Figure (cartoon, rainbow, N blue to C red):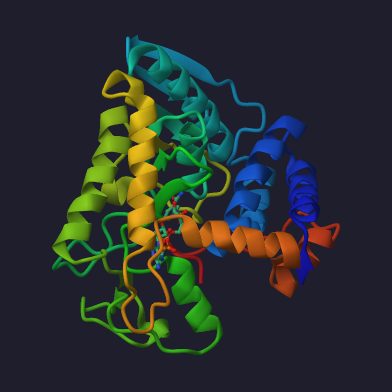
Length: 349
Ligand code: NAI
């Protein structure tokens, strides 16, 4: 089914409000989910609404959160999320971080005790639109083996980075620290398909091509991705006094309790380090240079991070955003959720 951005936003917002979110919170969450689908990050768009609706309805997301900014230094703060919608708390925390960086040059704001916050590119892009350079990292539930291990220990712990230019381009590099997202395994399972042997391991820690045998995901680039996901976990977990690694709460097991997740925003104001106009011009020149690079066979052209999402958004603006029929049918239905997630195993199916 193809829908416009506006139609998708309205459908998601209505469903989240029906589950119990306030209109303000539903607006914020819907904006992040539509951002993801609009750029082709379908793993973090409308496909997640039913999960959020079930968690909201069962009390696992605070519907009237009491957010609180705790300034801990001139350039540091903790944003207490009260286990409210992670998308909203992370947005408010980023707005605070941008304001602090405009004033002080840099800001590090920890977002403490939140639910899942979706595609992190959303938050860093907000900062880049204000002329800032930003990094955001967050924890997620354990489903990845440590390099050389057999049991899941860390989450898919994503890293996002955004940087402005002196034109309408924004660099947004936004990745999970695994070879592939868990959603890709579920997708292969539902289609009865094999997966490449680089994505995941079986219960013995051996690479597997059978999507049904997957026991845990593999870090991207072996020991290097393992190091990165550990770094993310430390920055958004222990640094904020939150549970870490294997102790991070499961997305699915108990939908009645807040997840107590952490996220960390780092915002840098270029004006405190160099001439900000020169900086943005230099970044634009870099992107121009990259676009002139010869493409390797089969690649068509060289893209900068975030460019393919921008092109996808332009295409979707013309043709409509592609949403699977079952997701669309759920969104237009009167049902809040179908009790599919509470108490499920660690990766839900
Ligand atoms: P991906 O593999 O689709 O893309 C990763 C990065 O590579 C993107 O910045 C993209 O612009 C860039 N890229 C891809 N192809 C490119 C090309 N041909 N040339 C240049 N750059 C290219 O992303 P992934 O790892 O599947 O992550 C998807 C989303 O999942 C992200 O938004 C991430 O924040 C989110 N996520 C959220 C989690 C959470 O707990 N909140 C957990 C894990 C992921």
